[in-house]
Amino acid sequence: RYILFRKQQTDTQMLMGTGNQTELMEADTSGISAMMAAICSELSIGAVLTTSVVSWAAGAVAEFDRARRLMFWARESRVLPKHARAGLVALRDLPHQQFTSAELEEMKRSVRDRNFRIFLSTPGIVVFNSDTLVTGRSAKEIWEKLDIADVAHAFYIGRELERAETAMKLGKRYVQDQPLDWGYISRP
Image (cartoon, rainbow, N blue to C red; front, side, top):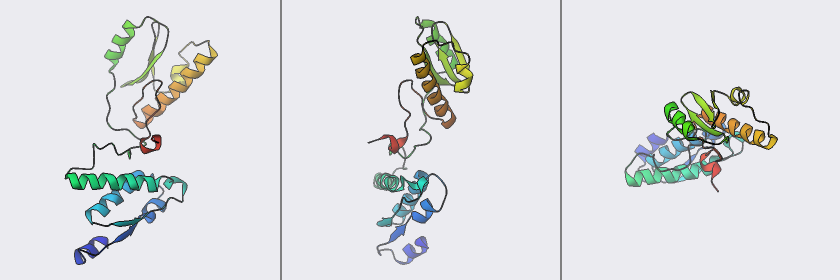
């Protein structure tokens, strides 16, 4: 209907409500908001009503604001709406480099202390220090292979392994001692 109306009324101001898409569809909203902002941009819709009432749409207003800025930039720059770091990729991550198994084995050979290093690689989670190299697909699997006596260190390693497993499952970038990046949700 919006397309047909725009074809008939090329100069008329239009309003679009996006709440039906974000509120009535039980799905994460950042992609929905981006798509709706793209439609608004293409059809020159200048006013939008969006809501964030249901739990899964809690960030819909902020997401739409970021999405409209991204689409405006893309239209004005005559480029695709990507590589702008708009923060709308929250659950997954943008493409990122991981160390190969060979690179991690090389790193391990140069380690002289017992502090554990944690990485993600093709085989999964990789943990090593000067004495040990362990790989696995879950925090529990790796934890059972490590011998950590110090309670504080055990807590730290357990927390890091859980973050690494979460990152692995979601295709996110993991860097030891750094929080996972959740897009606009992570930013002030």
